[in-house]
Length: 103
Image (tube, rainbow, N blue to C red):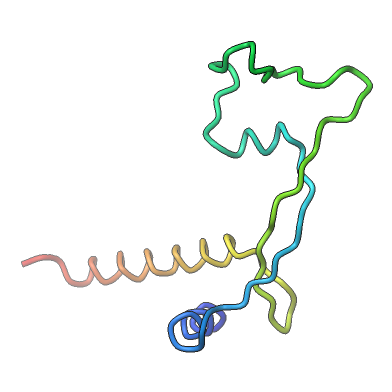
């Protein structure tokens, strides 16, 4: 939790947390699966089909930014750090609510 506290202080009092950005290569089909995009409901004229590559050819790829926080023991993906912090906060809140039920 030391990292998340330092990041909070950076954002609130020191002008912002410094996340590094790296470009990662990802298959276009994987990218489309990671968002709310239904290939089945697209009009055929738009050309989005499950078999979007000719057999024997590589899948089309694109680059997307990946954000990391860096510290002494290496870099950590921003979303992973935030997920762990959110889980910590939820547990803290649930514990408090269990110890202090409404009157």
